[in-house]
Length: 277
Image (cartoon, rainbow, N blue to C red; front, side, top):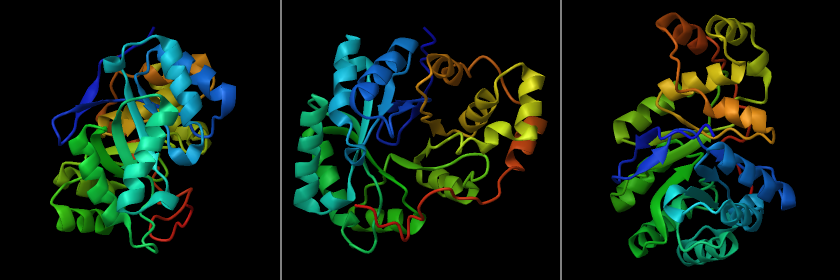
C-alpha cells in the first residue's frame, strides 16, 4: 500500500489529504469496485458529487473497505438544481443518505450558476450545515474571485477550498494567487488534463530525467504549487503511480519548464456562463 500522510492545512483548522481520488464519471458497480481499489492502494480523500449520480455506489465502496470513518476524507457537492437556502439543507441530507454517512468532510457548491443568483443563499445554508456538524468543512467549486468575494461580503465566511479545472495547459496562476491571499486551498479536478499533457515532450523529458511516469511529474508539480489533485483512473497500477509522488522533488528548471506549458486552455465550462443543473 502506498498510503501517504501528506496533507494541507485548511483555513478552518482542519487538514485535507494532498492527493485524492476523483470518481467522475464512474457509475454502478464500477464506482464501488474502483473506490474500493483506490482505498486499498492508500487513497483517503474520495471526491464525488450529487451531479455524478454515483454517491450510493461510492458509499458502498467506502463501507466495503472496512476502514474506520476517521481515516476517510469524503467530499461531495451541491448540484445546481438544488441552489437556494432550504434546498441546500435538504440536498445534503439526501447526499448523506445515499453515501450512508452521518457527515461529509467537505461540502462544495459545484458551480456558481450566476444566472440563478442563488449561490449566496446556498452558502448561508452551508454555513448552517457546518454548524450542525453535517459538513466538517465547506467550500466551492468552479468559482471565480467575484463569486467568492460575494460570499465573503454577505457572510464573512471564506470557503476552505475552491475546486477548479487545473492542469499544465491551464494552471490558473491568477486564481491561485487570489486563493493564497484569501487562505483558500486550490483543488484541481482534471489535474492531468484530457491526456494531452501526458504526451507533451517537455513533460516527457522531465519524466526521463527523474525516472518517473509523466503523470507523476504533473502531479508532483501541482503538489509543489500547493494544489490538492484528485486524479481519476480505473487502473490500479496508475492509482499507485499517482499516489507515489512524495519521494522526489522537481528543481527550479523543471518548475519553470512546467509553467511554460500554460496556454490558458480551459477544457470545460466557463464558471461565469456554465448553466448545467
